[in-house]
Amino acid sequence: MIIRSVNIASMVYNTNVSKGANIMANKYNITKLDSFSFETDGQTYEVSAEVDSLEYITLQFGESFSLRFNYDSAENLENILKTARHVIQDQIIDTAGKNLKNSSGQVKEWDPNNPSNW
Image 1: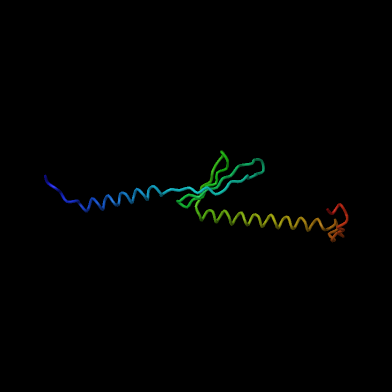
Image 2: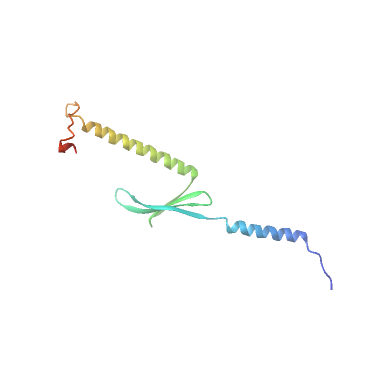
């Protein structure tokens, strides 16, 4: 009977294979974040948000469609939405200011006890 010595190269290879298997097992993960109702001009969608281990965000708009984007695109989207909100807030403030003036442009006298001002 001949006893052969263990081949160290194959042990290293086997070790790498098992490490590779562990890396592959943990390679792709999805973290579900939240869901909310999103109303548009004519429809309502149940939106769910998730982040994956490849650093992408996915927004699923019900069964209709989904958006998948990276960190930089998320920042761009966040910035444009913030800007749009500020524009809307400015419009609301301007409209409220116009409602405080009469037809000749003079500031209306405001009576907090007058039910029309409630």
